[in-house]
Amino acid sequence: MTTVRLPGGPELSYQEWGRPDASVILLLHGLGEDSDSWRHIAPVLGERFRVIAPDARGHGGSEWTEDYSFELMRDDVVGLMDELGVLAALVVGFSMGAVTAYLLAATQPARVRLLVLEEMAPPDPAVPPRPYPKDPDPEGRTDWRAVIAANRWRNSPGPGWWERAAQIQAKTLVIGARGSHLPQDRLAEVAAKIPQGTFVAVDGEHDFHHERPSALLEVVEPFVSWFGK
Image (cartoon, rainbow, N blue to C red; front, top):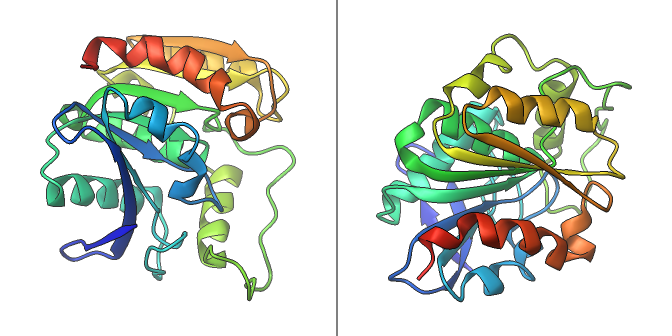
């Protein structure tokens, strides 16, 4: 695990796998997870790519902060890329990380060469509403304020989030899971609104790639293969 202090931002922890001379794949984890959640996927992708997986602010080994908006988490990704000398990357995001990746691709299109959104919550109010934790978990590795911020977005995404799909210039793969709690028809609609978006559904639950990483790799590897060495 390596750490880097972002100018004007938090200290982030991140892990790397693979070939330092290859195209970069950036892996963004879900809420309550950290970079280690990619441990079965990153080494496989690392056979042909340089793979970088940060811990989001308030998660894992990264610094806890006062604020946890998706705009700040996007800025953290841009700051990390700048510190590591990465001009653009293939970006893969899961759940919370997919929302960050979606915002990054819409607002910083030059930084995203390809985009994969795995089980991203569509920008609709959650039904039923997501609960807010009342107290911090004394043994947790995730700042409870980060959970509150993510669930607040899920309950009320705010205006403009659907419109951002049309701003994404990168070729995009939206991945859903047939057994997920997320409405798959709305994920398919996200893909349809992205100019170069494609939707694919796999068998499994929301976090299927933890139990069956091969299921994610089966759809991601062909999608990113053109950039691999």
